[in-house]
Length: 165
Image 1 (tube, rainbow, N blue to C red):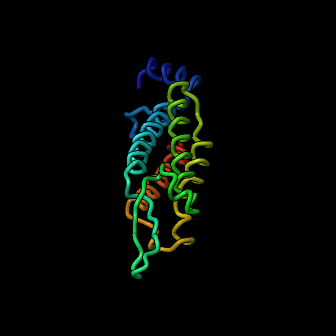
Image 2 (cartoon, rainbow, N blue to C red):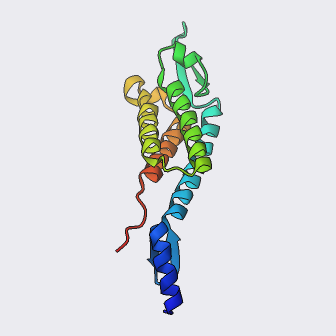
């Protein structure tokens, strides 16, 4: 390595943590944080699209003939909330709050990954609550996909980055 390159690296190290991978690629901690935020943002946009679809929440209504009516609703619908299934609406609101938090984090270039991980973890736990409370009849594949997406956002927000060895 040349002396100029080493001088450049020492100056860069003063301002930002750097990681050298295979002695060729320099990845700054800011780049890792930005990639984390963009990945989480893409997953959250997919989650919100899934929550808008009218197939996420199931309500079973009684039928005098014996077989209950099965109707599906969006996560943003107030009908399941009125029938005591409060978790989808709270999950949808927390997902929107998480999306706003990530957008603010990208615009202001602040590290809000700890609060994003807490909100995403809480939202993913709430999205799984109808399963033990109401049974598998009240849970759909869209609801499972939303839970998986929120767990993925929690994992991305909790990721610490490459360890400098």
